[in-house]
Length: 554
Image 1 (cartoon, helix red, strand yellow):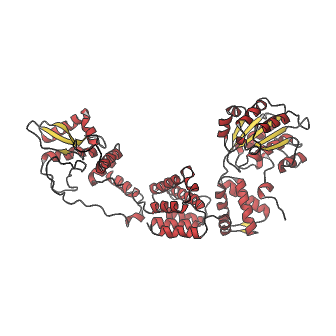
Image 2 (cartoon, one colour; image 1 turned 60 degrees about the vertical axis):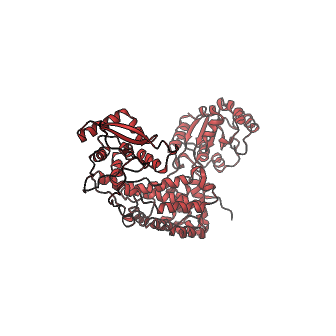
Image 3 (tube, rainbow, N blue to C red; image 1 turned 90 degrees about the horizontal axis):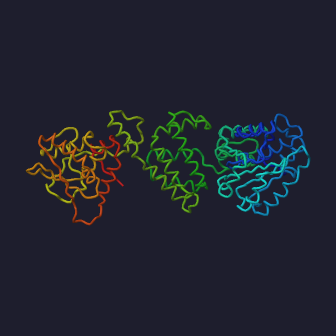
């Protein structure tokens, strides 16, 4: 037995029934009530949120025989015809996707010149997918849109107003524009509950949220999905039915995935993805759901573990408990990496979606640096670590211990990319050479050099003082160290600091190093340069790099 779709049966019959678009419905209702209806409207917004419905309700209100306070009655013959989409002399719906040429626009222009069927009525033309009209069609349509006949109203509905602006910019200035919004999850869930109550169907509390999320703000899509689930479930809807019929990923699978990531079990990623493939799940649907879960966990961490609306209490508590094992920094990096995965639709268009998913999840499972760096920064500032990540305490690499530095021959060797030896941390004997001791103390002093300069000067070699108190500093041309020494103000500051520390006048002479080598920057030098740029402007990070002798890892 044929039965109309829920989206048609429960289409709004007046402005007050339009959900989530109060700014539009209130304005149109007032305009009808006060007789201030414009001759042309442009309704913009995503599909399935009520643009065509609002246009029909406007046409019903203008031609209703029993209109009251700007609202159509929804019951008279005129309202019934317009609401159901049946043939009406005064309300014409045109699909611009299939009637987009200049001849169609000319035909519309000629038909619009005829008066309405009755003197008290309005002739309303609803043009759906208006952005599909060609430039020539817009040019033919422009004149009548600018100066329409009396009691003729045009309503243009589009999902891409930018294309209209590209094809015919004057159109936008001749219409009143309304931007329709996506409908919230709570509003969609509320409407689904009303529809199920009217249909006499029961539903689990956890069954409606997945439908609302899948609709992505489009009530029409939510009603269509509900129609599909009802055809399978009958008089009672369960969450299991919803996931099965709509091909959604169960919440348990996402919770299991984040347990794998929490425990750094990278090898289990392959078996997990294999289960998704064997279960017939759509990897694109999994990608979307993973983004929602990451966003949910990040929101929980930023809101101090508060329960999230739209999720059952039991499931919400499990998410709260899981979120405690990840820092906001880690979750943000995961979410950013996931967003980059589908740049320009790359993931959706790829024929290797499985490999892309596996690589992304492996990166997530091996992500363990952010927390360590944050804790180091807090330790340098003298603060206790906040929100430590318990999942990393057992898996983090042991701290690097500093043994005695190997003896090096004094001279001007080519190893200018290596850092000069530093005094032992936390005690030990000071370097025997006062000059080198003063040099190391000077480049580590944040009051003398700007952030990043001390790191750069670790790559130089210094000679012994000559008889005139001149210090030769070897630095490769084009390196950050050479740029520091070429700056006269910085060089003078270094000379004054060394003079004060050594108690005798010191002058610095920069000598180019490695001139006999080809002008090719070594990998080690490149790392030193990148490290200097990385810490520039961050004194806390500079002190960490200098004290712990950190190296840049690719």
